[in-house]
Image 1 (cartoon, rainbow, N blue to C red):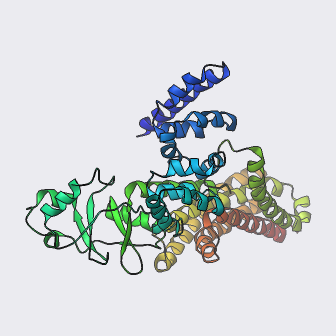
Image 2: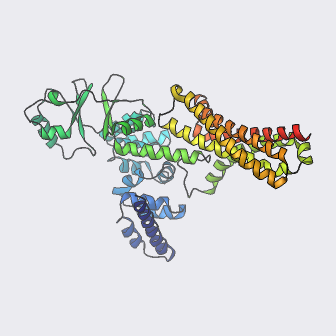
Length: 455
């Protein structure tokens, strides 16, 4: 798998290098256009993502109109928004008209509401109806994730009738592993797998072999919960129902993979205080303010930690070795806290941590912090005693390390659920809060104990 990914990256860079050479050498645009449109939509999207803004504009104008929609599906939201701004209403309507409703909705959601309405009016009536259905739900719910292109059947029909009905279609929707069984009011009753349909006696009815224990997804279920259910049940597709239990669409595994990737991107980028759709080649005017905000937050927390140090200025003046050893205590707490925090945020995201097991996890993390604290207290104490020939200093840094590692364990376990309850994204804010906590407690413990011994 790793080799496959590396090959894809190398291939993208190879294409990018060829295009750059042609552009820099003022090569014929026809050569670029021919090469570009000979690639798959996903490869074109990767080239656009990997190109600086000036090159993107040139490349996008060369993408053939009949594949533009497929290309936009693969591009991050921020870049999609930038490209859509260069297009008029009719152009956007043309490229989204033939897309699946969920994909078209994802693209349109990057536009202002006024423009969305103009694009919808420019669509065909059938496409507009499908897209409006998806747009009526929140983007991060099952309704916002679903596709309205579904095939439903009734229980009394025989399998022979169902097969003849399917043959009337030019094609069936992608990832169709099962048909959804409904009554005359479109209330969801169960599913009929394609495997059963093709291998069972064609004269028996749907009712006789349908599954009635299949779980359907409420239209307002959060997308991360949908992803968990797909992972737990190994689903390829699942029905989406409204409050009246009527089927309104379906979600397929490709949509869920997108959710999982977005969740991973969100967790990774949030730890650095960045948006999960951060554009690698975003203009300076957008990149600088975003980073400045979290740099400002970090400055405030650093000032708070420094103010704690300032309280013990007199002690530090007397014992210069304290200034040398202070960063060690804070660093140990920061690393220990990050380890706990990563486990808790991941466990919470996967639905494995809740009120019923949080107490056990907290106890485990405290004991882990205590045992690690004692272990490294002995190591640090021995080094300090040898380095400064001061047994008191060795004991002080040892005790401070134990205190800070236990604090890191408590903070790393309790901060994410606390922030979530306050309506704050733990992945975004927990790291900054925990670093501040371990710095303040670490400095307070180390310098406070030093003051007792050396004042």
